[in-house]
Length: 188
Picture 1: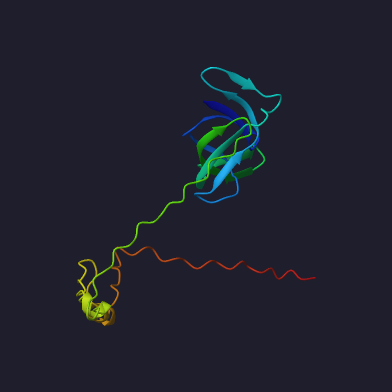
Picture 2 (picture 1 turned 30 degrees about the vertical axis):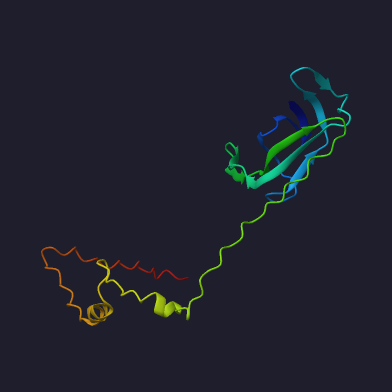
């Protein structure tokens, strides 16, 4: 049996057991959800088309996950105007597993309560070791990339060698001072 449902402004063809990514719906993983806007219900023997909805039909599902789609980039450019704008968008989605398709006004089956297995009793110990006693301290490994701290201090305090003066042959020609403009004495 299959059905066509409407949610989030879109239509989806679903069947029991399908996993469908729909527009975001409120809820968390494990919550049950029902879709009342059923447009079509089909099966092996007949198909019922609603006008616009099928009366008494509903689709039940369970929220598996709340997630976001991949990023789409929105890039706008106005040529020769030095105007560019880039934005990204990720749409919120809800992942739903369809559990059953209901007709004739039936209600969804009650969700089976999951029972947690009983924890096995632990044997009682006389005294539980503390974290320091249980796990011995790991010796620190010296990294091959960095020298010990003492060597770093010694390396930084070492005097620097004086700068070498360039030979006259290799030195760049000295700048000549600018000639000052001659002031005219033509004052009237």
